[in-house]
Amino acid sequence: MIQDGIARLAGEDKNANVPFSQGRAAMCVASTSSIPYIEKGITSDMKWFAAPLPGHKTNDQLYYGTNVAMFNTSNPEEKLAGWKYIKFLTNTENTAYFSQQTGYLPVRKSAQEL
Image (cartoon, rainbow, N blue to C red; front, top):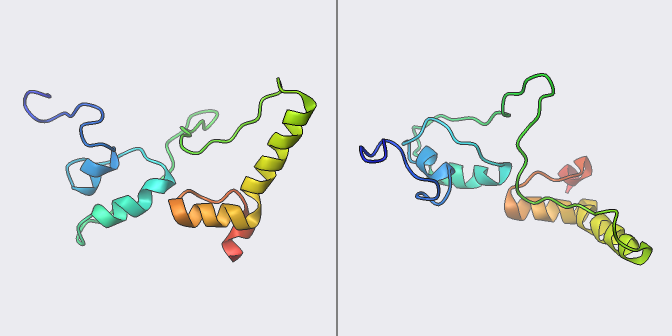
C-alpha cells in the first residue's frame, strides 16, 4: 500500500489531522487542541465533526497531550510545592488562558465564564 501511494508512514504528514483536513483521509484521531488546525486546513465545502472514541464496557478513552501528575514518592516539602503548582496551573484564570492559547479544554467549568 505504501508503494502504491495509498498508505502513509507515521510522521510523513507531521500530524494525523493533515491528511484529514486535506481530504485525503476519512478520519483522524486527535485531541481537542487539533480542532483549530483542522478548521484552518479544511476547504469550505468539507463537512466534518468531532466525536469521542467508541468505548466498550468501561468506555476507556485515549488521552494524550498536556498531562499533569504528582507522584507519592517525594518528601513532604516537594509534595506541598507540587500541590501548589497544580493549584496554580488549574485555577480558573490560568486554565482559561491555557485553553484559549492551545485549544485544549479547560479543566474547570468556571473557565467558560472568562
